[in-house]
Image 1 (spheres, rainbow, N blue to C red):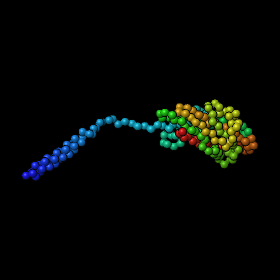
Image 2: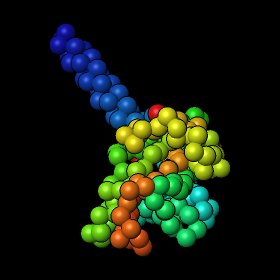
Image 3: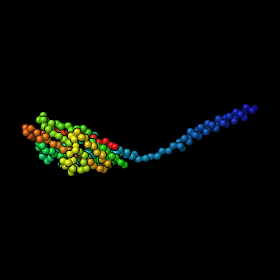
Image 4: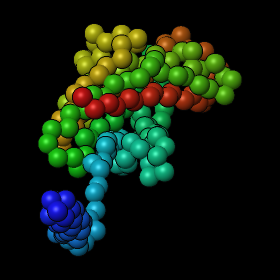
Length: 197
């Protein structure tokens, strides 16, 4: 007879455990909640650098909308003429126009020595190009800016968010350039490399 109350007690405990499990399982949803939210937009900051040339003051972004690098043509003089034994000047202003929050300083540098090309005339070999960093485009036409610069110097500068910096170029034609090259043309390419600091 003692086993009957023990069986009843075991049955009650088993029923309580089952009821407890069902209760916990049934109330599991009370621990979760759902809140509706409108979809938001997350936008990364733009790494934008603007380029403005000396003569025309045209401005373009350094990176085009399709992700390729922009090329900016600098005219050294209104007529584009360089005379033997003389120099002409050009410059490009870089602007750090990012929309990033906080500090966003960039370092701009001339990436390599100038690449000179011509159409087989040989004019490029008589050209000397010097580069210098400056504070404004107005300084580019000052011969004193290039006095200590070597043709192999590759200037660099730091530009703060919202600030600008200028690379200036002096192009000179050797005084011993043959007269037969008069009217020839040559191109000069300079890569500008910009990195975030």
